[in-house]
Length: 161
Image (cartoon, rainbow, N blue to C red; front, side, top):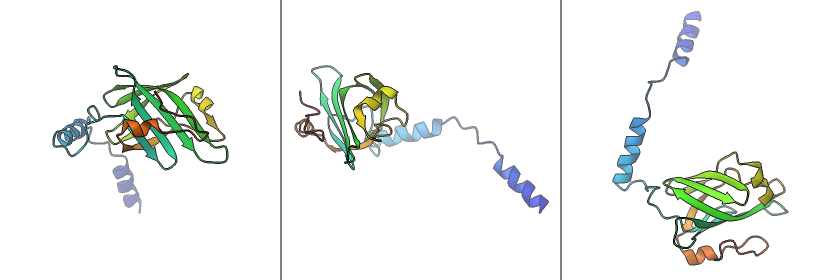
């Protein structure tokens, strides 16, 4: 019994292979080059994004790299969030400014993920127990015209020019 315990402890305490993650990066680069995985740096952002009752619209803002963004979560009965602002993109990194709420989100080519921990200023856009934290939406339309139609629960246009 003691020998079995010793073997289990030894197996569980082994150090990893010391890999530096280069193999994963090479695999991802090869997948992007082969067209198997969308290149987040080249994939367009404009359009309508959604998952369940969470919605996000992204529109061009003039001729520069800044984008208009609107976010809406509606869980009913006074639980939800509505935020308007701008977004700047650097590859797969999205820098959002929603008033005093500023944070960096991630774009993987197919979905946009907000971080699990957001600045306390982001709470101002939410009611009840709703939060913008960990929002995860996928593209449902690349149409700018459709993105312009997104409205909040009270009818406010979220991505109007």
